[in-house]
Image 1 (cartoon, rainbow, N blue to C red):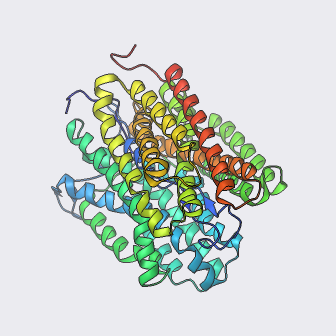
Image 2 (cartoon, rainbow, N blue to C red):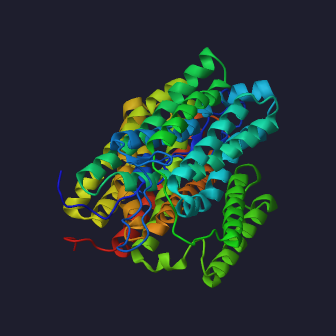
Length: 533
């Protein structure tokens, strides 16, 4: 592996959209499906957002090994134990995103949930995750990455227990919201821990590859694990399985991660935290409401406008606050601004790909939930391949070149997928285009996340990671809502395989255009690296 290293990659939380079937699968009988975008790892974006190197003379927080015994000297902890602990925590979050999907019909039967209630089993997680991500990132900077890792994982584990024993629908929804909050606190902390634990060079590159593989494995295993647990035990075990595993990871975190400390004298910008959390949550709520109410409904427009207004007030407050939650100086960097903008556009297509591939496999090709999950495993693996190819390619041909190339490859995959037919074969209508789409997204997201966190001061590293995750997540939520509307309008309310295929195909064509546009923006906006022309 080359010794030259690209911009310091850092790893945000990546995920994919929650996807459920329709008709028999989700009990809706509408052909449009219950869906939500959940920011749980898109393994490529997750892999890349490790926070930047601390600036010389700046505060340095020992986010990970060696650990310190209470009142005693530091003891050496192997780096692989630190990486194992952090990856295990992230795996739980990713697995839980996809493992819930196949259990929704059973949840509806046991708890008497309506179609809207089923949607909110998914959306409660989405809104909490998106709304609290920036706050979670800043908390890791101020209060220490180990502390926030343990707090986030603890919330997630307790909420999993509460959801698993829920006797009423509202109890399950509340538990899902707390799970999303825990994930939003955990994700930025894990990025900071990995950066501090692994020195620059080939070792860090390997750690990033491991992180990507774990994220993809969680996403791919969700359908399989969820199907097996639901069939053999009950839907409750798709949540309860997190409890013993989460407890073990918590113990490992206490033993193997070192305490991290925030900068001296730093404090949380409470007004900014309230404004940005409420604003992002309102925007996310408005987006997910478009599925049921439509884009022109007050139920969608009012929270969208309120969210935008709150975010505008947040920017004004941050410009006048001595110690802001999100220093606006971050956006003076061309790399940070361009990477977040293009990640927003890339996420709008990448999240939708998982949803529409699953819908096509189940509603048109007739796959069951478990078979559909197995069918998408090669696509999940292709993200790992793309994300692991990205770092050495970045060192050889430049960060911008890899990002542009990845977006073009993904766009080609979307265009291929848009040629699907109602009687298509697995090889040409699912496997081939799926692998091409996700490999390209893996190639593109890694350099974008690296640029978004490169050169950021150590005390702002968690925030920068949270920001790129928020861009990806909100882009995914908006993109899936728009493309779902496009697909539904093309299908015209029909649930025939031919009509559904026409709608899905149009959504993929729109995704191809979005990714091609993203590639053009990357070409003209992203800064050039060494050796790039």
